Image (cartoon, rainbow, N blue to C red; front, side, top):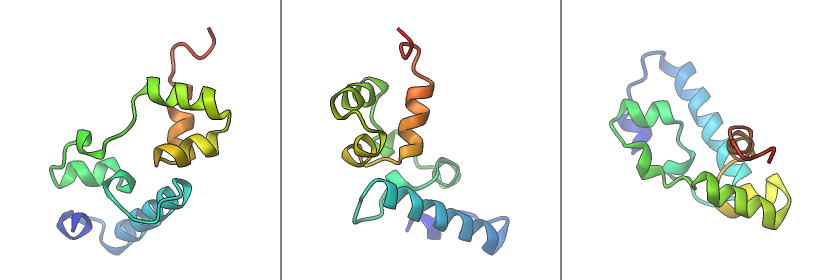
Length: 98
């Protein structure tokens, strides 16, 4: 439904790129169901869905899970997010080097 409601100003190429990204995000999160968590932020903003509805984990949650599991892949799968997202959280963590 989200993809149907989104505007596609760049037509099929943009839609194809978004679908590929959603599939990669879903595969990386070991999820058996596609949801708004896998939808790119720009698509969600274009249709007026608040980013908060994505239910993304906080930096603190990612940091604690990473400390516990000691693996980016396992952390991503346990939180239902991609490895890329975990790496972005950790890269942007102001306490990473303390």
